Image: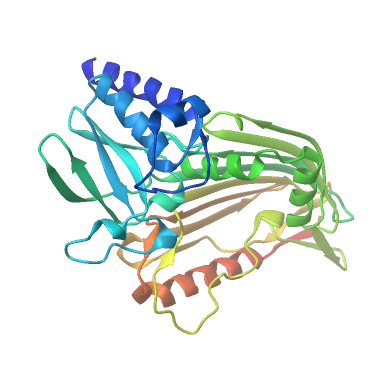
Length: 352
């Protein structure tokens, strides 16, 4: 109960500072800062905002520490004994009942342990002012983000697919969705989805929880996709993942000398159900497949079932680390290549 109350108190302070200030896009300036003036202006640099957060937590007797970090575009603090000029940003570390929480109040959509991606850059320096100690520490890696996609469709004889898509995004996936969706015209947002998904027509679009920084984001819409299937003679061919399939491998170089940065670990789950036209049945479908990366870095599981009137597809895609070393590049490249090949395979329907 004590831990819960302390965490609630810390979150309330964090939320107040986050909502009160507007970040002026300036990183840690380490000079000429004035927290009182920035509080009056309700705007400030990273250090003004996060130091205001730190002071508030200290006043509430929440164990907290200033933590210096180097953002991703600033490079790694690679020295054995980093100097202060290696760092250009600061965040706050909170410890409650021996559990670590990292906070950055500059972004309206960040949350406790959900920092802007730029903050995650291996290590930072914790400043313990009371004991006059600076410690090099690891920054907590992002938690797994999960994306869910549920498609229910009806296929017509002429190859048109009509149905609904419902999706949900958690943690950093939700954070990224909110950032992209912010201040965006809803019509242009729908148009971009239509273009991304093979020029489908979308109607009854709904999205929830994009204005808050907590919880998951969900969206849903009805779609109409022409030419989703091809008719050859009397047989019908359809790629069951349809518009959601991966088409292009992002890794094309022969070799790579630097790590692959996916931002955060994530898992995507797809559940697709397609009702086939009357008078048809499944003649053949792709084989179930499991593709695994070495050292449990990730996996891809493809399972499909076809009945007299329905195709059911389940896919689980996981990448378990944000950073994957260059020595695993060829594995990653082939992993995506095999996934693309699998999602291009078709279900064949025959006339009864």
